[in-house]
Image (cartoon, rainbow, N blue to C red; front, side):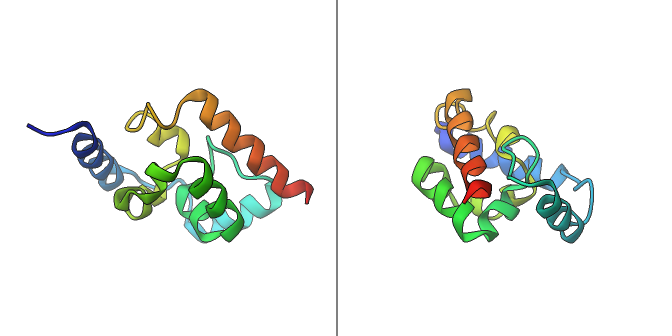
Length: 109
């Protein structure tokens, strides 16, 4: 019998295989810089992981999800909001709001 984490990892992997980025990652990165702060609903996890400050926020606020290898690899093209369906206990609406508030602070520094 599979546990919830195994099911989530399989589902996340399947989603990552099916996911097609809306724009090349380089274009998304430049657009993100022009748009301002990161978004839990629009910024790919890979972009967040590649920024040391954003990555530190994720590691601090969602350590279990952050430590998941599937999140670090296959989740890179997904947004935190999209991954929420696979990690509902860790990525609650309240937690996403907390992460968004921390991202918003990055631009004010």
